[in-house]
Amino acid sequence: MQKEVDSASSLFQYSNVSRLDDAPTTVRSLSLMDATVGNIQGRMISYRTYDKNEYRDISSYLLANNYHKTNEFAFDEAKHTLYSNGSRELRLKVITTIKDKRTFTAYEIELGK
Image 1 (cartoon, rainbow, N blue to C red):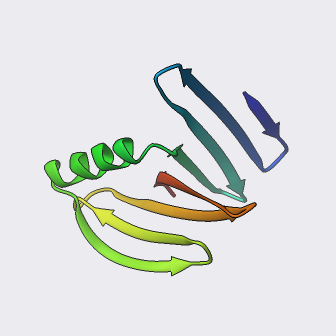
Image 2 (cartoon, rainbow, N blue to C red):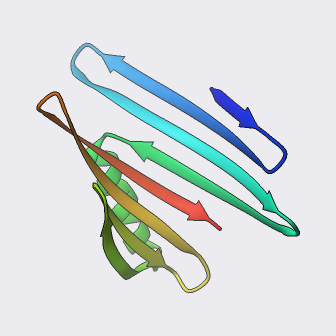
């Protein structure tokens, strides 16, 4: 766990690495951020995984629970897709990074304002 707190914000990040002998290593993280500016407060929660099957499960959940794509755009190395069910909006990101000639793809879901 990592924790950063100051007078205007707090950030908590939890990470998990799963290593199994007969399967690829899985890396996940969960972040919670609270921010306050004057009288305005916000909270954002994000979940990141490098497991494409988890991304597929998250996408399937959204479609099965009345979420519809409202917008899509690219920002640097990330492809952002916004979904809404009419009362809640969330962002699903696919982030592709190249390091040492290897390609890594992260899948992240964010909710909050």
